[in-house]
Length: 71
Image 1: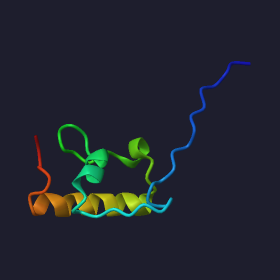
Image 2: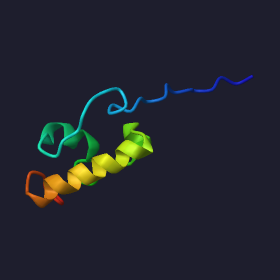
Image 3: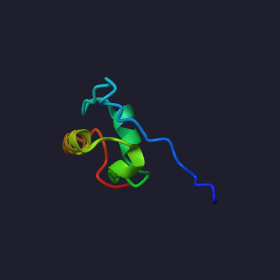
Image 4: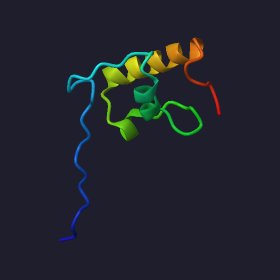
């Protein structure tokens, strides 16, 4: 029988107790790629509920010019 490469399931950081705020740009950069696009949840490991929070906070940070829309 062939061995399967099973990856460990990523844990949502916000379910683990970390809060996310639009003013915390360094944390928000973890959820965006080098071009400034929001990274999908299958890559970041966030749950669906918190991925909506991530996108909302990134968009708020962009609106008040804390983060760029594109690089």
